Length: 321
Image: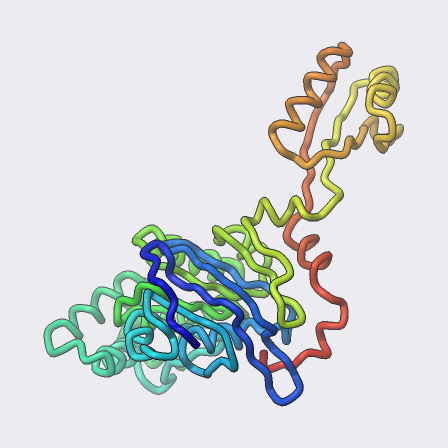
């Protein structure tokens, strides 16, 4: 790997990242740019290379090729500086179940060399932030899944990292615990922390991410904001509802080719869901003096994007990612 020019507003940059295990190519020259203080989500089917990407960017494994810069430091030449700037929460809990939450955090504070005064202060702060004060001295083996994941993330934050890698942080959590974790992630970003997220929950990426990249077959097959990605998939429409068949007939003539439902008295007009196209549609209705009883905009969601962009034979890929 060669050095890359520093870019203050850029938390992560990877160019031509490659990784193979024997003849199996996991990452086939991917490029990534993650802006500081944002959530970047990496999506992909099982075996696509998501965890491999996280492991490389967080210095856990080495790449076979490419240029990588994390927090302004070259990954190959300055791995220690990269580790000092990042935190990692993996798919599986890394806490010691026989210790208490407080003991786990104190152990991490000692590993981070926080000192006799700073360590306890940071532990108390994190217990409060993650709503673990009442359970602080209970063994982790008595914790629920949501509590364990909160403790996992709290341990990641002991060193006050600028960049956090979250590899499927809400896997296995119930909907309530998942939303608590979303709130924590939003709070971190509001304080300027950069989040690199991998997830199987497409709603999670849609709710949290500023930008999303879709990884499949070792390559980035699409990247953009959630709305930009949704516009890649056809099928968006505006559903118009009418009070009577006469109004429906007039609208159907105005929008030739739109799908009509005579029983429901509705018409589906193809649309990308944007404000411009919606305004033009309303202008046409107004110009033709057609009264609408109701209107709803339907656009493809990230499930549609994911299914459209990723291959159906993903299960053949390496499970270790």
